[in-house]
View (cartoon, rainbow, N blue to C red):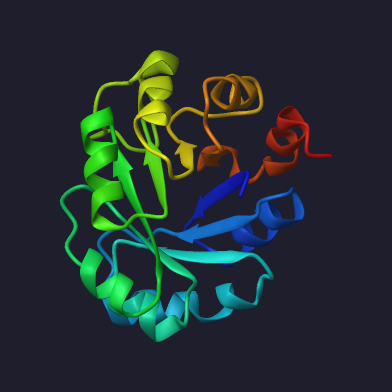
Length: 182
């Protein structure tokens, strides 16, 4: 898992996969489980790992590979019981260890830099904070928040296994090339 694209529509997901995304996360904040299931049905056919954000019942209904839960989101035990890959969010080493303790198979760490995509995000942790999180857990860490083609390599150099992109999902090929995957 190198390039994790977080998307809200199928066309963007397809573009991200064509650009090198190995994981697509469907993020529909505020949508009902029924809306997530209706929107997400074709995502499982993209040929990459498919993760649903925040909604365990939708991930199960869609036959997704996994679910990503924020620090406040319930359902970690239900996700694991259903055989879903669990990812959790962390803005500190302590939160990363807590996620790993829940059974997370990866940690989404950040925001590394300020990002307009999530105005209510925690303050940026920077590359130093990312490195601390990477050192704190044995599961893969995915850097998120302000990641683009110009700084993706810095995240990998800080210890991240991969990067997640939202705004740059359309330009996934540039990020993939910056990581040296193409």
